[in-house]
Image (cartoon, rainbow, N blue to C red; front, side):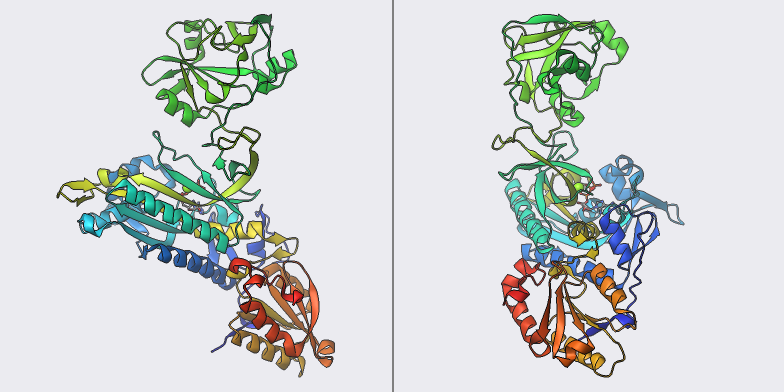
Length: 584
Ligand code: ATP
Ligand code: MG
């Protein structure tokens, strides 16, 4: 059975105008193409065309998950609050967790993620090391009461995620599944046609666990990244920055009067040097109550998470505390600090022999303060938010900056949940041991939006072949014409018989309206059937991505498409756009 979709019967209400609240391309175009509609803040319905794309994205993810050996299941969105109390996240998760109370006064939440539920599911029935490893996944609706739902599908309050969870007897096994999942995530991005980077991420927890985020490069992305030609990429929150040599070197340490200078910007302007040649000091306290003074390059910002980790909790000193230690705000430095001060400096300063830094005296700075000569550093640590231009920690070349959309993340959880929730298995000597776990999430709806962010132009969406709502749109110019209409129908049916998905725009609209809608919706290939062409036995074929058009003999078009389908070259890695169709 071949099936041709008819636009005249399809519920695909396109919009001529951009919706007022749509700030980015994917939101704007998915709305205008009649694929999604907003029903509440951060909540969207998928109309038939949107649903077709969604199903394709899901199917690609499903195939890649199945290939790793993970098994599909479906967990409920409604989760008992008591499980979240067991893990401690009822209190930790915060207002993002959508909570409700049932008629019996039981606490319930709408799942933002499923670690608790899946752990509870297996804890009494996955009993022996012999049954491990095990990986389960689902494609399911998640709820998060995001503080700022925005950018359409990119940050919703209700969205679809593929979430997988794995259970292991040992770290080696966890690492293997983590690597397999990471490889599958790369393939998913490729099949979705996404230009992406796997990036080093921060797990957000002290101690830090192993995690990697897959970022679709896009200006609309909320994440800031650095990346290098050598393949290294990191979220700026997580990345390391290596030494950058200073241009400013002075033989002897000199004390310079810097009246009124309190900030790095003022210091750099006063000395007429770049901010990168100065060193910034931050005084604080560790959780253990020690005085800690941190030093970082003047043009960098402190990464608080990293500082916390390096020092064992780091809180900046209040003004009164600074005074009590005799530390002058705005001109602190490493020379002449109180004896008890623990001096921790950014590793990127290790190669800077002479520092331009405060003199611990209001209104004075040092230039040429010699590391190891005029002062000592107790510890070196990774403390800064990495910036474009910093040296790549892998190869030393300067890093480039980019913005990205986090489409997926892989995570080694260790025994965090299994320990808290008492989920154990019997190991080889019969000892009850908590599982090691991994979790792996793909934002299905967010990925769909990311595809549109990367594949659009002024006329609309340009779907990669792999996720297009249909591959070919046949456009009869004059509907009802006794030659054109049947010819278009026959052509559509012939193409469908080749195994391609075909839609026919049989609406009695003006040609201009149909062309505009075809480009807006983004069918990869459009075939226009008109009276004049037919008289010459020709139809006009247009490639959406390049806009190229060519008249092709009506009799050879199906042959041509069969060729296009067969030859892998035309659909590069399944995500092509019929590129090369005309080059035969
Ligand atoms: P973010 O940092 O963007 O809030 P997250 O790191 O909290 O996301 P995860 O818990 O890692 O998200 O969820 C797995 C995946 O689910 C994410 O990589 C993302 O693709 C998707 N996702 C998360 N939150 C949302 C949301 N509010 N709307 C749409 N997709 C989301
Ligand atoms: Mg994440």
